[in-house]
Every structure is written in C-alpha cells, then in structure tokens.
Length: 98
Image (cartoon, rainbow, N blue to C red; front, side, top):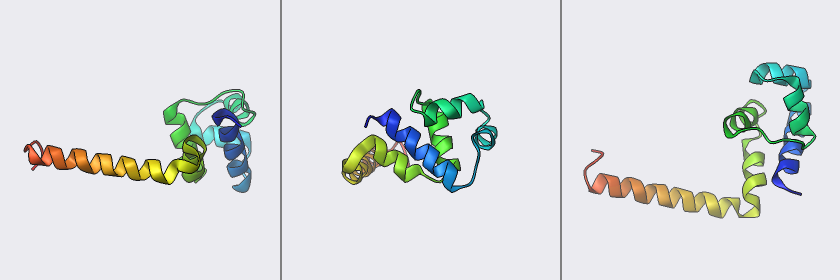
C-alpha cells in the first residue's frame, strides 16, 4: 500500500470514528467535499498544510506520521530530535541565541 492509499484509509476511518460526514469535514477544513472524497478514495493527496490540519482536526496525527515514515517512525523521530538538539547547541555556542 502506498502513502496515498494509506492516508485515504486513515482519514476515512478517523472521520467515521468521529461521526462526521464528508461535507461536515470539508466545512471544518474549508475545502470542497469533492476533495475529501478524492483523498479518501486514494485519488489524490492533499498539500502538506491541508494534511496537517486534516490530521489535527481528526486527531490522527500519529497514524498519519506512521503511514509516511513506516515502522521506522520512532527511530526517525529520535534522529530528528537529536539533530535539532545539536543545531540548537551549536547556535547557542556561537552566540546567535542567548
């Protein structure tokens, strides 16, 4: 299953779990109901901002993250945290941030 298919299934399941219609979700996201339908049927993937808002509104951020990162998500997240900590330490060291 590719990312588009996984995302569509995650969003459809989360929407139904919350008892929302496609039209109600579309209104919450300020998008057309046809977009909700196309995403849920794996015919399109929304842009990053819309995906982020959609996952937030349906409280399925973790499922979306895991669908894109796969089973390595915890490792990738830890590496990101370590990288960002290193960057913050370096910036602090050179005095950009006090």
